[in-house]
Image: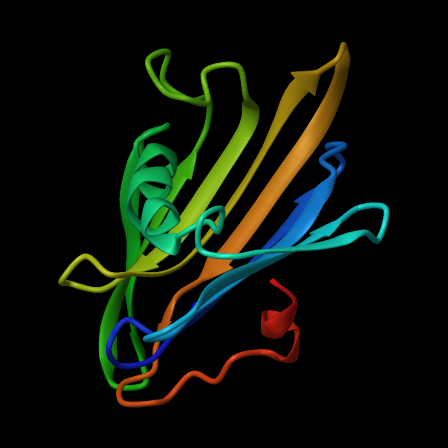
Length: 161
């Protein structure tokens, strides 16, 4: 997520793996006067929606990240410095807890870079699960990047929503 000042952002989520998920990428743009979303489907179809149906990264930033973080035993693997900022790399590897949202997953792996203030800079999750009687692998990677006083400009497709 590229985040500017005043609640401006450009949010990109890419979905991969062997799971047959029709959505492959979601991009959300928000500035002071506009909130639009572009969704790219596996078959190449592209859909644009306005504020009434656009996803917001806050759910992804907090709620969904939390469910991934607590799914399995999570430990701090190391402390690193990136661009002068101390970050903690946390890892979860192993079978998810029976009370987690990922209880039916196997080969669960999660890693994240988190600031001392709790800001999740990026995460990666991979697991196997069963869908329609077959085993699929799901992988999701997401990055959140603060951009300070940067102005985030609308993408070309924003006028189509």
